[in-house]
Length: 147
Image (cartoon, rainbow, N blue to C red; front, side, top):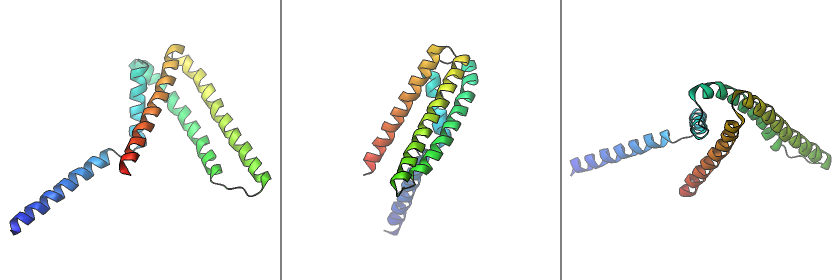
């Protein structure tokens, strides 16, 4: 009786350990997200290894600049203005951030077209959009299952 209980407990611990290890592999990491994004873009836009090696450093630079603006915008969204004048300033500042993000995007799209043909840049932009939609759907599906 004690041996059966011991084996059952040991088996249960083993199952929990295996499930926990599998869940750690599925956690979000920025590095894995970036690697999956780059692989997806490379495949969908049919980038050669040489094109990818020239393109992705510039692409990462653009994303870093955009993230820094997003970070500022996010901190601004956390502030709850009290007066109408403060609300107006907040709205105008958020609009300026959105414009800045688009300016960054425009300047880097021009840089991309110096590295790649316009058709491939077009394919890269579409692949990036599609990848983000797929990731959003995948994440939303996981969240629905948890509830």
